[in-house]
Length: 196
Image 1 (cartoon, rainbow, N blue to C red):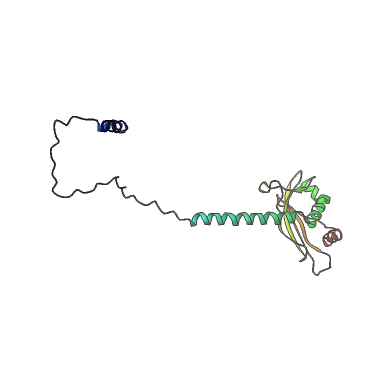
Image 2 (image 1 turned 135 degrees about the horizontal axis):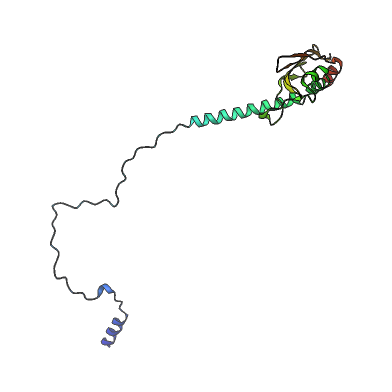
């Protein structure tokens, strides 16, 4: 009975490779003595101290962004104001008077039209202001024809509300210095402007 238990115990015992009988080493390592306790070693090398990256100021970028935004908004307002002056009834009547004037056609030729500008994608630039409610129109712009070009100056005011506009200045100064005074049909211009 005892032998049977021993056999079963040996059968169920797990053995490992490191438990195999190994021969003892022939030469033992020399003994090493220490004069003090051992000091723990570092597991990794410590990073060397590095210089901090240069400090970059953020305000130049913010200033450039603000200047760009304000400049873009100002350009948009100027473009909108120019389009308002260009589409006003006073501008249409001035162009009509220029095309009907014999003196203008004699100097500038036929097909008198506003001179386009490259920065407005072909639209003309109208200087001055058109204030219909305040009774003040003062504009100037470039025109060109088949034989020449020049600058138109037109000024008209209304002294009191309800009264017609009165033209004070309506002339063209060509590129060669010639001044052409344009007789304005005051009744048609004033009635058209007043109706607007």
